[in-house]
Image (cartoon, rainbow, N blue to C red; front, top):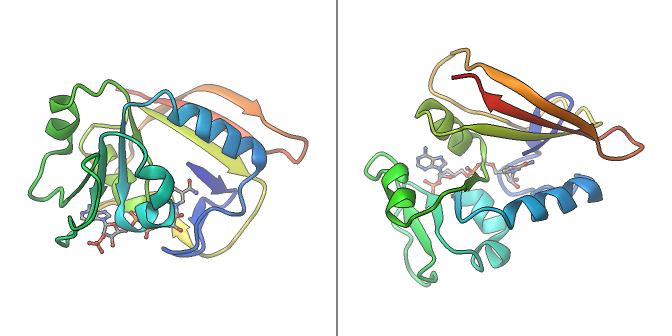
Amino acid sequence: MAVSIDGVLAENGKSGNRWTSREDQAFFQKALSKHDGFATGYNTFKIAEKKVKKRRNVLVFTSKKRNKGVPESVTFADPKRFSPRKFFTGRGCKNVAVLGGPGVYAYFLEHGLLDELFITVEPYVFTKGVPMFFGSKFKAHSFVLKSARRLNKNGTLLLKYKHAS
Ligand SMILES: NC(=O)c1ccc[n+]([C@@H]2O[C@H](COP(=O)([O-])OP(=O)(O)OC[C@H]3O[C@@H](n4cnc5c(N)ncnc54)[C@H](OP(=O)(O)O)[C@@H]3O)[C@@H](O)[C@H]2O)c1
């Protein structure tokens, strides 16, 4: 995920990530190519629909019935009635990329399904917007920093964390 210094992902559910650096975008595309499953919320899916549809094993979180006109590689489902873990293991996925937004990140974290976090911190402060995680309760989830790399001269940082468990 790409965030501002104050932990904001985007202006709103429809705004997208046009403010992220070229270096982050290059890292993101390269990282995606190493994954065989993808989980996203409905709004994030809609913003990147053209690109995401080309990938296999895409799970889109939604509370509504929306399966009309989507390719076979894309499944819409409500995690209240559906197991993302079974979905991906049933398809033999070894490396699932959780693409957000905040409710999807929180779901995977709260269900013990987030092993690693790749966070690009861009040197901006937005003061308002979509937060990184939007969970159901306050809880300290521990992570260990594995690496920190500066991606450009503006000071964009790539932080890689592993879940502490
Ligand atoms: N900077 C980054 O790295 C990054 C990463 C991801 C997203 N974003 C940005 O964040 C914005 C989207 O944020 P968003 O808050 O709208 O998040 P989102 O997760 O993309 O979309 C929210 C929608 O997804 C569905 N959803 C999410 N969690 C669910 C759950 N647990 N159960 C059932 N349905 C669930 C719901 O759809 P229904 O209304 O259909 O039920 C919900 O209204 C966009 O601007 C996107 O570009 C940025």
